[in-house]
Length: 454
Image (cartoon, rainbow, N blue to C red; front, side, top):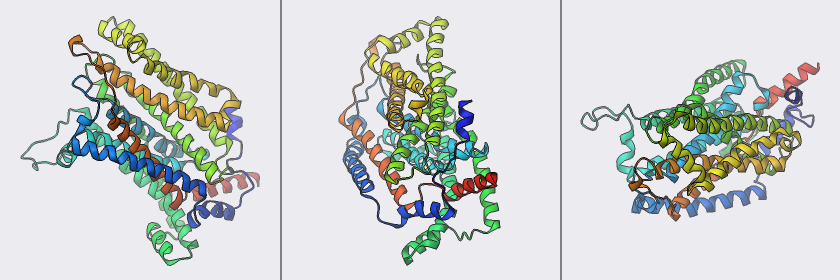
């Protein structure tokens, strides 16, 4: 009953008119950025520059700069890859699935969530490419190019190749979906532009949009088609990522629960990152009338649901390890909880299972400070989840003689830092030069609200 009453709250507050919506959102594209934006952008760009040194040294010296060893062949690189791919899930979910279900509350957050998806997938793709050691010689070998290599084909039975197809498809569809949604807003900025350079740039980006009925008809048709294509991608991409592990015979990986568990975890972490970004954007750009407490509460409910699913998955894993009677599986989970990486396991359980349950309390899920802190805690916990799955399963498997510990080096941390700098620098540039909220869809919400009142 609480959810129903929440949905009926206004999605845009302050008695806004169409002109107000245009002015409030376009002013940050047209005018000089606020000092808070400049400070945040400068910091993220400095992080990008510092992290670039680690990337350059990794390419120059090879991945021996990382803490990998013969036992733990996957570590921070694949942990970060899965983590970034998971973060990219919320954008497509908010844009595609909620569009198909006609959920109006998505309108103020879908633009930034879609941008987040693009940037997160770019960050994720860095890690497999760098892991190749000499990407300028080997990156294109993952592509199915017939006869180019003397009839040498890629291994289509490998889930690693499935990743290439799934993530490249996901990125392509998400990019097109994001750009199509921007076209009407680009046209608005074009029409308001006062200098020739801005008018030419946004005129090219708007692709001749004139706002006629034919334009809108094609826009809505393409949006629905792309939403229909993107919806199965939300489920398939992280399912295929989970196959990297589930199709192996390593204790702790060889499990059929991974596909749904990974998808729920991806949505869980993705929504947490959207909240982190939107709360910052809301404060910096003073968008309280558009990103309302109602939006934040509904997103917190999604985090609560997906966090509970992830918690059930953890308990199911433990139960199946015990019930199977397989000593290797039982030891893998015992080692996670009591072994040398127990600190990571219990950090994961605390952040992912316990912290989201606080959102059962309405006062907490409508609190901006609590939401911001918990959104960061959730993403820390989801990083630990991927670390626990990958490193603790590898460092002690069937052969005690090959057991080893993994310790990250400064290069591991530096490359991870680089992706943070890249992600936030790209997001802040997006927030400056593109409308961060979908003006056209917000106006449609205002129109439907006024029609109901009439």
